[in-house]
Length: 87
Image (cartoon, rainbow, N blue to C red; front, side, top):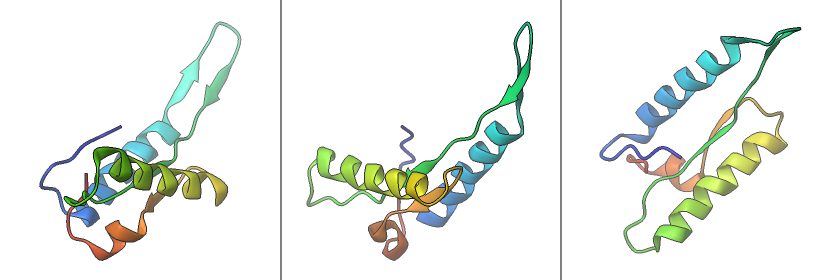
């Protein structure tokens, strides 16, 4: 979980995409094989009138959406698409 205070949602998405691509491009080595992994991310915006748990749940729903729609993606929650700042 990343918290990016005072970060516009579009920049949070750019940062997360850079992390996702770096993970995707990394080759991991074991004694007998090479492999790579991917990652999915969900981004939500902080809503001051909601509990911390509710804010985290929105990020979680965006993450599940990324996984359900093919994995290896970054998805903005609906609130993040409408808001300027992320958590």
